[in-house]
Length: 470
Image (tube, rainbow, N blue to C red):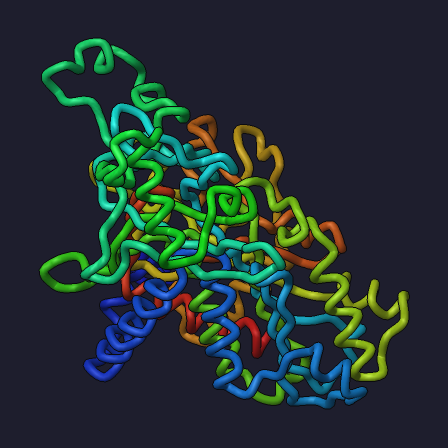
């Protein structure tokens, strides 16, 4: 028996590193440097939206509202962007085929787990100025204490003026902080389950301890903080009600490992897929099918609201694009959505040698082995998932193989271990073909997550191949 020939029947999952030439290795490293800059400028969904638009305008993309207001039409090759309430963006490169034949779409989300301020946030207790918070998305609460934190967001003042706030990122800035109980007095705390060691109502942020000079005044430390905020931002206490202020880890993205092979950053989930799909989109010129890169908000809390995937933003903007090209009708819009193909660009769990027991290794993702195809997510019996069909899996597989993409396939952990979801099932409701496809991470949803530089670059290459060939 020719066993050597039989070896060709097996699937070999390779490391991206093993195929790189010296020149390609430099490309991987350079690409990750730009990625770190993107991440440091994009710690909130608003900041990510602004950075995406800034980069898109540099590449020649035009605001769809300008085209509509000027009564202009669009043609094949034109590049357009649309913004939804400064929290979601869609980019389009118009193709040569009629739009009713469908779009090639890569869709990611730009929100990440964090800690938000409550509307009535500021108070004083035991001569400390504190902020009340409500965490956003799935976090391990104990990971957010005793680390340097920053405040990012906007304050809407009387009359509608919007003030951008960033405190804690400049090396000369102060940071803010959530305290924890000292080990010496933690006997009761240490007996609690890990999930309850830090309660949600205990994630109160420490922002000051110096009182104003007037010893007769009430809440002197709180008043001093209000004085500082008023001097810098013109804020009053009531403005906390009309603000969106987010607590995020302070500091820049960093290389990890003596070989600098990985990136530590806040918000890899899912801005790592946003960046790679954005860069892929910038390489699209005169495609056959219209291509779209979609960046949405609220995925971490169910994709609801006016800026989440459940909103009609995407459907509405597709209608506007078709109208600008003179191809809109309600029926053609429905056909365009149903005939589209999409990669739901979201991250997955990478095998961690410290915690191997939560994954089934034959169906798990490994850092450094390229982009990850995930046929279904959900939990337990595939609940709340999009389960991609075999035909579309085959199409994506062929695109990746034909373009030399290093890819792997995985589930999100063992069958009954847990689970998670993405925006895939929402787009699939239009009848379009959708599969989850993204980067494997370590420490997903932690304040600082880890990704392989090789996977970041390979994901960009995979998204580009899909946009041009699906």
